[in-house]
Image (cartoon, rainbow, N blue to C red; front, side, top):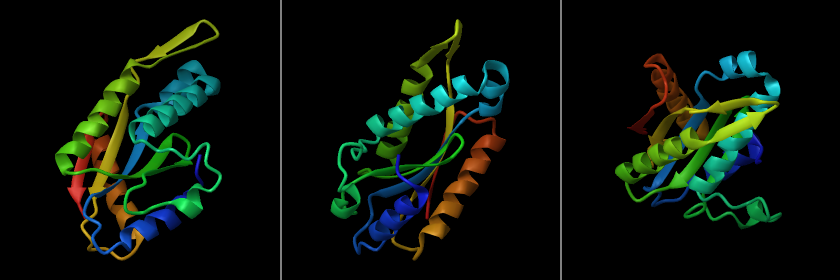
Length: 171
């Protein structure tokens, strides 16, 4: 998994592209994650994080695990990126042709994650949900911290509404 600082450097490269209109930046975290840890234990929580990571990597078409030179060869005009911020929170940057396509992609990932079933020591965990706040970058902000803060505000709003949703706004 990519480090947050590496991700932010790659994101900065992406937003410096003059015609960057198809870039979406989002935050994702597992709903009720503390309850998973409290009710099933931290090992189960770790497995839930791993499953979410795998689901996001596949669905966002992030392919850097087998490429040691990913950072050097990162093409900010077309490559997607994903990083774990800590705990159950992830940040991503992906290219989509439209806001509708991005929402469809994220809702599809939510559906795929909800189908996951985790078994550990005779216990089963299923129907997992995640929340997501996504910003459609429109070439109007100069640094990644502003984008991150906007995505974080959307995530807060999703959680306030009960989670399990995707909120998308323009930068």
